[in-house]
Amino acid sequence: IEIVPEIDVPGHSTAALAALPKLKDPNETPNSYHSIQGYPNNALNPAIEATYDFLETVFRQVADLFPGRYIHVGADEVDAAAWQGSPIATAMKREMGLTNTVQLQSHFLQRLQKLVRGLGKELAGWDEVSDGGGIDPVRTVLVAWQKPEVIARLAKSGYGVVASPGQAYYLDMAQADGWNEPGGSWAGTVTPEASYEYEAASDLPPELSGQLIGVQACIWGEHLVSVALFNHMVFPRLAAVAEAGWTLGQNKNWLRFALLSRGLPQLLSDAER
Image 1 (cartoon, rainbow, N blue to C red):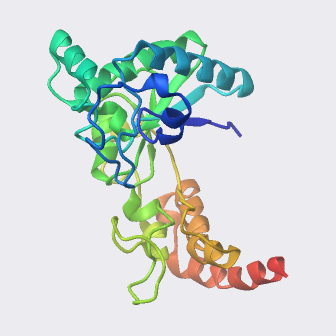
Image 2 (image 1 turned 180 degrees about the vertical axis):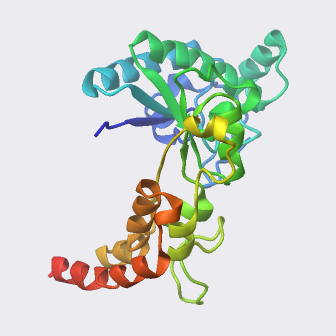
Image 3 (image 1 turned 180 degrees about the horizontal axis):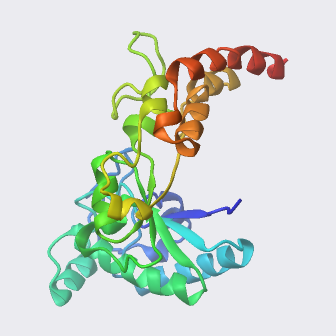
């Protein structure tokens, strides 16, 4: 088992920016952008040199704590308007000939990759790492989460790919269409059968099959308020993703799996008691 720690940057950084005001551009327009979760101005600013000093300190400690090959740097869900209200970020874009937020994030990630490699690690991240020109794909692993088509695009670009499309492997998505069924909806309804039947390699030509290094099930817990709700969302879909990842397509059998998984609720109930 290789544990891959994730420190998600430059977005999802509201807490860090609140704790370290020096990482903010004091002249940035307040509320000039928002994360999809609603947080204003939540991304570390690539034009502030102290940003990289801070991240070197953080990642150096992470590298010391975790012996694995990779540090996952996130890079997902940065709003398209991020840093457009920051004068110093605007000046950096002009000086470097960059035109938008995606290209500026790519510059940030290129520096971060150099930093991580200097610590003897390789960079992992979400599929947005490849946007805006991307970074060196050699020994870089990206998780394709937004839609299945991203898997082939990343593989063609030379990245190692972990398949985790929300439409099949996000366990916080609703798994049925009932009005009272809990879960999200941005990736549609993800039934246990959909999780089981999905083949991550189905859109890859044979010459790129080696770029697919695994699959990943995701569960985001901010709305999971009880163990019972967690179990309802995760099982049996977690077992379905596991079998999909470890079993050749011709050896899968949904009816067999469905019959065996009927015993899971009783096992979980017994465990809770």
